[in-house]
Image 1 (cartoon, rainbow over the protein chains, first blue to last red):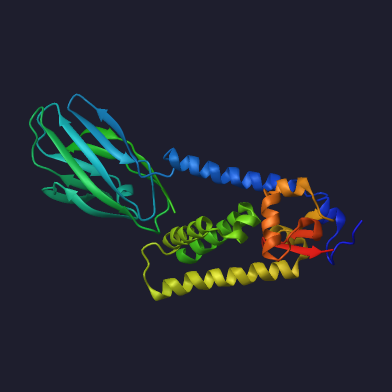
Image 2 (cartoon, rainbow over the protein chains, first blue to last red; image 1 turned 120 degrees about the vertical axis):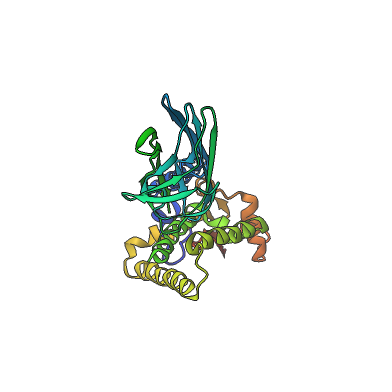
Length: 174
Length: 145
């Protein structure tokens, strides 16, 4: 048997005694990376939008928005209001979570009035007749320092009356 | 503060990635591997600095990576028990001209690759080799009979 070079031992470096765990650890880490990539493909880390809706006898409110996003991403939120009866003063009332750590680049169409009531933002639009629709799109960008979950509820109100309310939660990954 | 935290996360991620990629992939640096490494660098830069174009941001990010590199090196030097985890350990691939199949398979190295590495060191036959050792840096060292 040839003599091994200095600092090498037969058990450790040739027979790899007690080193069976090393390939297993490597495999586990690779599987973790694979899991992260698979979760990314499955939209766990966000940006892709999904739709939800709520309705009442007065109106239907549809929301298309991502449930998750990451720092720096740009995305669009789409509110669609379908009036089932005349709405004198349609107001989209947005929870604070729609604004915390997020930059709004544009709101289309611009509201007639933008109010702040009890920490919530109220976007006021012109009257809607029964059967009329209102599409509102907001272009967002996530601030790099914004991390965590936030409630993004939205309500459609007509003056003091809440016509319909929709819950939405968004997670922001670093 | 965030840029320092992001740098730490990315450093640990790259350390893990480099440890699981396999030593041969890191040391051989075929053209494809080189392109992938450059692309990784580009992705990492965006993740760490994001919209920060300031000199301060660059100093924080690069400084943090530098400090962590020295820290890992110091930990490896100071605590020998950590060395296998941080740097790995050499593996003998060939003894007295005979390849050790299990060790070759474990590191995904073929006999042709071993022979090519030997030729790069002006060794025309593996039969002349007493020991071939895959070092922690990914290079294969040959000790002739």
